[in-house]
Amino acid sequence: MLRKILTGLMLVVLLFGVISCAKKEPTKITIASDATFPPMEMVDTNKNIVGFDIDLMNAAAKAGGFTVEFKNTAWDGIFAGLKDGKYDAVMSSVTITDERKKTIDFSMPYINAGQILTVRADESSVMTLADLKGKTVGAQIGTTGAFEIDKVKAASNIKEKTYDEIGLAFEDLANGRIDGVVVDNPTAASYALQNDKYKGKLITVGKPFTEEYYGVAVNKGNTKVLDLINAGLKKVMDAGANKAIEDKWLK
Ligand code: ARG
Image (tube, rainbow, N blue to C red; front, side, top):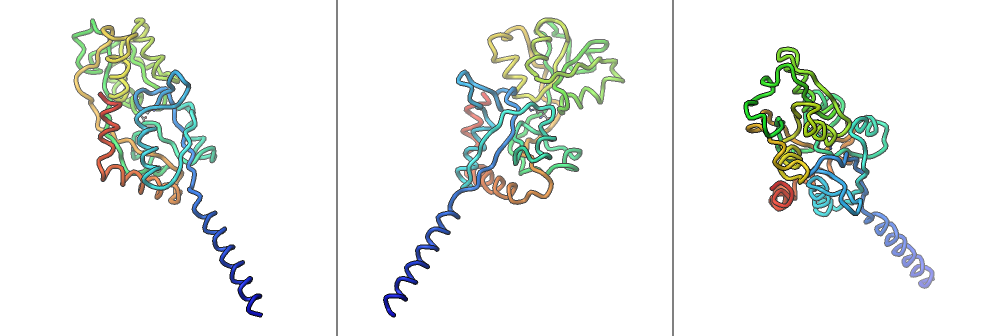
């Protein structure tokens, strides 16, 4: 009798062990990112996705007790893929806007990165977008940079050219096919000021002319994923650990 009870007890203990082990398996969050946007997300020579966003999210995952997998995904369609459930989140230098908030939920903001205009280095008289009257300005399609051109193009008689990747816009700018590029300040600096290909050929104009905060996007109501991401991000930001990541990538 006693033996039966003991065996029974042992079985129960074993079962609980198995269950709690299974529970300890951390949640894996899959994240889409358009890795054509240095220094935030890009592909290195070993074909790994690297950059500020990747380091920040890995730190958040470590602090928050979950794991992440980045999936390199074209910007055009990145939110449609989120909606279709192809991944759990989008972390791709996504600006938190009221318009986007209608269809997606955002994490806490994690950095401020406004729009800035880039022109060829010999165009020293250009101060603002309006100075490019009659000229063509490029931006990545469906980005806040393109939205800024949309706002002024009619009044300033500017032609807009949109690109699938911002690198193609800088290429066209350097070659004289277009006359300006509007993109997030860190990415403009990366192409215009740090990339050996364009150093000395391109300049950014003044200071960023918008205030924009980046957030991680999830499907509306996906609090399970959003709470995990926010808890992790908060820990990293409260500890000031994001500063070292900023120093590493945003010099
Ligand atoms: N911040 C801008 C936006 O949200 C541009 C983001 C583009 N990101 C990228 N990885 N291509 O519209």
